[in-house]
Image (cartoon, rainbow over all chains, first blue to last red; front, side, top):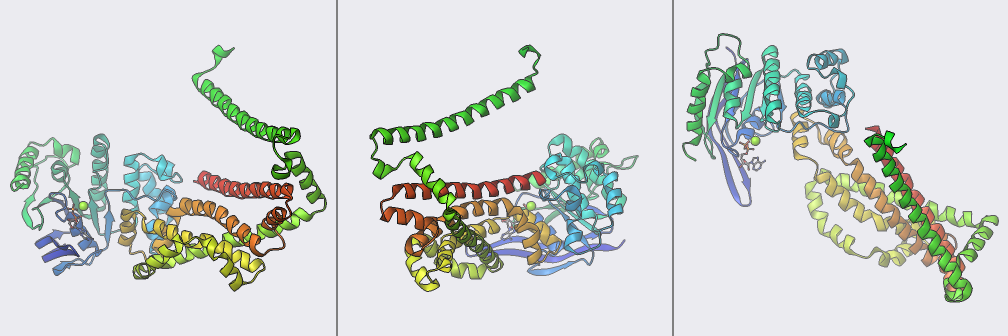
Length: 246
Length: 265
Ligand SMILES: Nc1ncnc2c1ncn2[C@@H]1O[C@H](COP(=O)(O)OP(=O)(O)O)[C@@H](O)[C@H]1O
Ligand SMILES: [Mg+2]
């Protein structure tokens, strides 16, 4: 299968008057088309930096980040503009890129994701889960090939989190997007991803890459994944890997 | 009959009663204040020559209204204040926007802005009037000088403290600097800009009155200073009274605008 993203010997540091912060050290990995990859690691280890490198918001000091696909970025905070209604929020990216907005298509998407009745509502009037779906739609309407999700579920309460994870997983699968999910929640990584990349503490390098195979008889969903027998095994493996040098 | 009220209705009724009570107290205070003043002046506890009295002030005001003279003074002061307010605020915001575009320029100008801001601007008024002329122009320049620097500093501060995550989101859409300004920085600060306008109304009035004290032949500041010079305290008090009403009305207009803007959301 086609490679969509490739990191080759990537190093990245940040500089300030106080000194250098070594963040990424010799990072190498490949993401294939349609694959869902979770990146997990202690906080401050450089997970967001990896996404910034893929999206071109920052450039590496050494090495190469190869991707020539359209990238959509979704953040932990929904970042909705509370002075714009749902429709205007969703079309913000198109407005910025000066693209023509196909309102019928947006309406279809709104209907599909249960937001059509809220088209002209303002973010303040929406629940946390709905806001997150609006944020996802804002990214999806630009039709990216690659989705970057930076801890998108971590601000939701547990109950909402589980449903939104299922919703978003369905959307990713349906649209066959290559996805990189950054998280610090091991269960989330196993439940959603095909591949889990575990990072070490800063300066981070890749400690281990796991291919997740839960041996499910039916199609995978995050909820079903959590009930599989192998789930616990993967959890323990990754837990130990993360914990080892703490 | 009260038994039929729901809790919601009770709440509303209670709320309205309290609001009415507050309004009544406010009106009561005004009446008490004016009444005492009038009474004390009439019986001689207060020296009428120094303190004037409400009935004399009203009489004088009516006289000024009948002769239409008051409209001339109010018109000129209002024009000067509005010019000062509009020019001072918009110029300040425009400069803040330019500084927002260049961090280096901001750093270069920072100490000068701080010094200018700390300076009591009214001390500069005589010089400004000599530079800009003794007519309306000079007075408007004084009014501008009072609001300009503060507007630049606080607007820039608001602009620089825009939400980092929203900024990153726009950058991920490859937004240009101008798009970031028009789509995020300005709309997220509408409320803050309105509060700057509110503060500048007061500043602009101070500038206009100080300017009129110094040079003018017209305007409310002139009335007040003239009244003081000829010891006509009725005139001074009347000027202050008209001034209070005008400033309040301008403030009210901005508040209404604020409410309209809030409801539109
Ligand atoms: N723009 C930046 N300037 C300076 N330091 C940064 C910048 N971005 C990130 N860092 C530093 O790099 C490290 C990794 O950050 P980040 O990628 O956000 O971590 P994570 O997402 O894994 O929590 C942190 O120590 C952070 O302080
Ligand atoms: Mg992060």
